[in-house]
Length: 475
Image 1 (cartoon, one colour):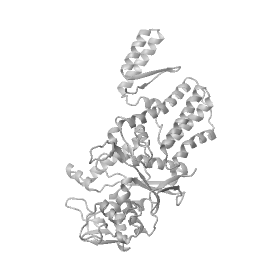
Image 2 (image 1 turned 120 degrees about the vertical axis):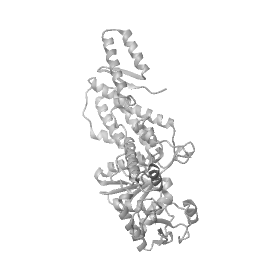
Image 3 (image 1 turned 90 degrees about the horizontal axis):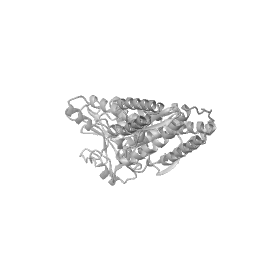
Image 4 (image 1 turned 60 degrees about the horizontal axis):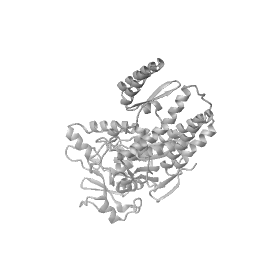
């Protein structure tokens, strides 16, 4: 099955062919760690985690290298550290830990590498020196700037003419610049800001050079896939590409450029400046991480996605449907249904129905539809007591869903999520009392206990091996 990906550079979808199938490389721009990340920041995390999973499925887990950087040098970090009166490392360590925990809750695998700017400073400085030596950068008044006129292909990625790029970048037209579009590679630090020694004077790097140096150190340039949000195409990725090509003399830099669309509240891009931010850290307290992940993948990654409560509720309902049939199968097996052996060819054919749309530039909507198709087949096999069909469809549903990062929980755990330990203990106590009342044919007590469970928002399902329960959907 051939993987096809849309390339921002060529503006078309094409077959993906890594330089070395034994070493497939992908880089995605990661967080600036000065606060909890909003849910919009997690769209690329989830999208490219899905691609990471798919690449591992195709080429093998040991043959895919994925780097997602951490920006831990930034004006916002400096301000936060100054406000709290602590070192910047206190801020960055705190929020990187929270970011990784939130990403894990959304089902994202840890990248192979997570390089940090502060740990890549030698490589950054060396790359800047190489650019100066190659005639693509120059020193001026304590700064080092990239000379955009030294790179004839500047603007090819974004497809913008130079005057539009200058306006779009909102560049500082400083007197020491040779051209208004030239951008900073190294700059002096302000008073009380962190700084590092360098041949160009003490200071800190510009934003764009950080990613280029981290890619080269972690993965080696050129790479197969470079990902990020659509807002990074210009100036960040345009500048990254220019630096990388001029530093390494390899005109590829990244074979495929992929960009996910914005996450919107209403008609506006989600952003902290607009005040329409939903923090993933908060959402995870109210919804299962898989439901948030499903919602983020509900639309095609290249298009905008309207974010609202209804979208998450629809995602939760979709997963309830899938977990529901797995729960029913588990209860049937506990009741004595035979666990038949599975046939690999049958399972592979079913899983291929999900893999195929994913290989078509991550067509998640079609892949989700196929998950429901397998789920419906599982339900039909269960109703017919076709236990071989149950075994094959169940295994295929789990394998295909796991490929997308779903159905990783125990079904009972899924339906009881949201219940704290105290509620779980109380429900178990009531179910045991109800079972005793039913055994004694005390139907009045049994009905009273069922009403008490209903008041706790608990639904009881009776089966041949006893009763199970779930938290009911909120009206």
